[in-house]
Length: 132
Image 1 (cartoon, rainbow, N blue to C red):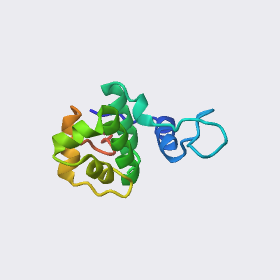
Image 2 (tube, one colour):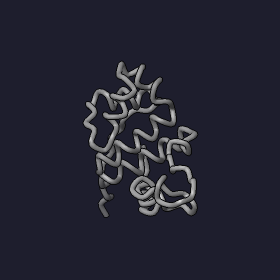
Image 3 (cartoon, rainbow, N blue to C red):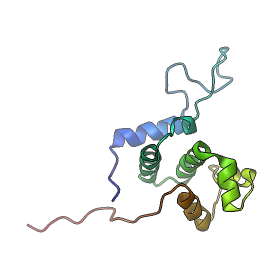
């Protein structure tokens, strides 16, 4: 069963996606004269635990474009070409589908999660309280 992520962790994950310059010395290209590399979350997703924590934090937001961005990070960390091929899509089609304006089918999302070794699960949003 998934656990609720602390608000600070969710805010941190969302901040990284919304403002990729929150880390000292890391800024998107073109924002300064320095030759700095762009922050790419997919480079820091190394384990299944990283994948699960990232997805759980995104799911608590109820923000579909943000969730698609997170799923895109996870897919890039595993290799977009390989995943797209296994989904029967082009790599470009998968990128479009997982963009913030993308509209992937539910089938695509479920297959993608399965390829990542994950499955969907449902739990109560507000657990029932025990009666006194």
